[in-house]
Image (cartoon, rainbow, N blue to C red; front, side):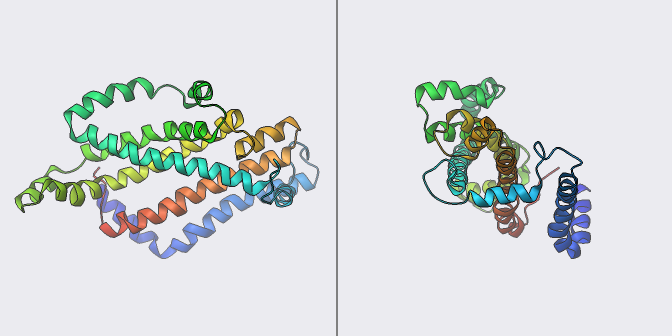
Length: 276
């Protein structure tokens, strides 16, 4: 019943896909920014605490470049994206493997389930002092923080995907003479992929928050978190807001463009539906 409702809603909104994807976000984001601009320019709010969005964009534009100074905007963006994507990639690969082992084997569940239950409640940022002592102020520290932040979501969603798979799919594949490898490649992987993408999306959100906090503590010279922290020491509100804007834009791009396109080219083409 729920699948039929979902299909009906999807078909009813297909004709308005351009409006839903571009115009609705533009209006939802543009109106508050426009009000902010008017209130700031008109002096109705503190221009120090709430500088106009055009001034924030102008400040970011003036900081663009690849030089070695701490004001290199491209260097901050590149460093944060590199740390995020490497950590998120490791979390996706290892988290998928561990999730499959937990979902398909008794020994995997016996080994990894207690570890996950024990360490998942620990805040990710609490690992930062330990990693700083073990590794030092280095990219490896922030990458490991991202990995820890994202891995639990990936593992749990993969396990949920396996547990919610229809057992009839295995029966049909076995009755047709499929080998274990063919069942894994043709049945299990497509079956867990919708859950995996959801887990990566959730993990990327946790990873961004952990990354920015870790960069404030463990980044040596570059990164959006470092940029925001350094700007706060000089009360540079334009740079602080600019860093927040960049984090939001990059997070939206990763979730809705990169992962959205991946989902469209895999789950969308396979016609896989999540069982409810």
